Length: 223
Image (cartoon, rainbow, N blue to C red):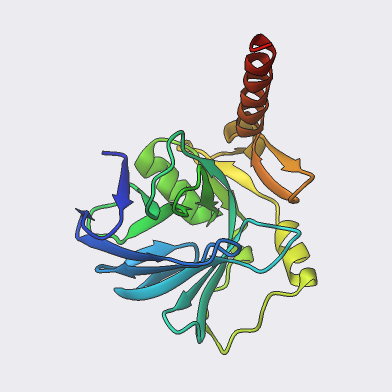
C-alpha cells in the first residue's frame, strides 16, 4: 500500500496510532497523539502528544506549526501546499508516505475535520527524493538548507517578515528519477480567493461556481 490514511483514534497502521481533538477554526489547532515515531520535514517526532496548527498569518495559510502538547516547544514551521479530498471527514485525517522498512512513517498531509482542503508537507530535497522513490510518485520539495532541526523553547509568533521569507523559498516537485520539476506542473494549480486571501485548488473554486450556477437555474425554473 503506497499511502496510509489514518482516521482518528481507533485506527492503527504500521504501529502508529493517532488520537485527535478538534479545536479552533482559524488556526485549525488540533491535538494529535502518536503511539510511534513519526517524521515531519526536518525531524522525527518521538511518540507522544503534539499540537498541529496554522501559523497566525493572514497573508499565508500554508505554514504548519508543530508544538509539544503544552505549546512551550516548537518543533517546526513547516511549509505546505494545498491538498484536496473529494469527501471531507468529520475527524482529523493524517496521511502518510510509504517509507523504508523500519523507518518512521512520514507525514504526507494533514486535513482538519470537515475540510476538503488540507496541507501537504514540503520536504527537504534529499528526503523528498527518497520518499518519491519509495512511493513512485512526486513529492513537494525545497532546498535542504531551508530546514532547521533544532527545537525552539518559548517560541514567539511568526512575524510577517518571517512569513514572507518562508513563502519565498523555491518549491519544486522531486520525482522518483531523482529529478526536480516545477511544482505547478505536478500538483494542482491554486488560485487566491480575494475574500480570504487563502489558496485553494482551482477545481474547488470551479466546483463552487458550478454549484451556484445550478442553484440559479433551479430558481429560474420555479417561476
